[in-house]
Amino acid sequence: MGRHRRPCRNRREAIAPVEPAARGKGGVNVFSRLSGALLRASLVVLLLALPSVLLPGVGADGQQMVALAALFGGVLTLVEYNATYPGLVEFRDAPPFNRLRFALLLVMVLTLTLMQREASDPSALTALSARAAGAVGTAMDFAYSPVRLATLMLSDRATPEQTAVLRNAAGISYLIATAAVAMFVAVIRLNRWPSRNLAFNVWVNLPTFEATAGGDVVQRLLRDARFNLALGFLLPFLIPIAVKIGTSGLDPLTLASPQALVWITVAWAFLPASLLMRGVGMARIAEMIREKRRTGEVFGTRGLAPV
Image 1 (cartoon, rainbow, N blue to C red):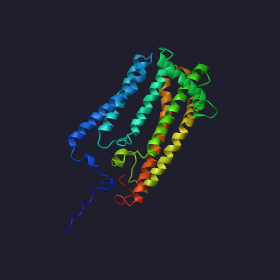
Image 2: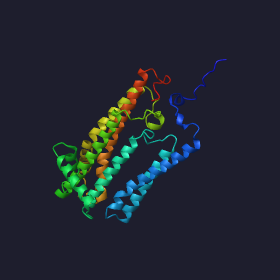
Image 3: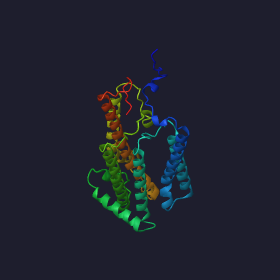
Image 4: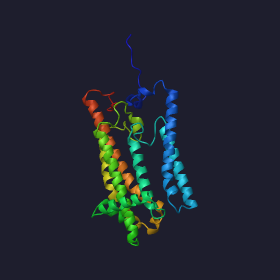
């Protein structure tokens, strides 16, 4: 009698690619995944606590809020990276996507923190950060630029000094974010992402993308990629407008806190950069699936290829 293939229990099993590396290494893989998740969680906690450690003027309530945010970020990272199938973190097993995003966030937070520290505890490093931010902010402050629009988030009561501080912070943050996106695009152009040595598991790396929702998966990936690219490009322009309309501008007292300035500027620059990187990544996955189809290496009949 000929051998018959075991029928798939559900549609998800029919299209999900199997990762060969996961076989026969149960105990080693569990320990390796847990240790990696603990390391990543520790790094996230340190990152979130960095401004409160280096900057002065943090009260007891502020320290408690920072500790709570750092704990939440660490626990979320631990759960997502220790789980077999993450629920929120995308491209978990497709380095260096998340490593590059973490490096972007770390460099941005550290640079802005050192820039703010110059006013209270000057040193050679803080002076270098402040001068670099001032030069970049001045160069990028021209009509209709994202940096010029970022200064419009301030209310009319803001002083020229406060406007200059926000301009410098926005300028250096935008430059760092642009460099990170360009670096990710370069990695893709060099054909090094995602790695050709590892199977790209759609269920693990795109947990928020429902591949079985209907329609051609390539077209849906490209549609989501275009949406993320457009939104990532427009957000630096839209956020200041929304803040100005919704709140009549940021209260200058808000930016009197160095930590508040750091995190407001980081959110303004990091979120668009993340969306741009996500859009580029999804477009790359769609391109890989299309290449597999052209070469006849299609997996199943559901429109999804193991890439």
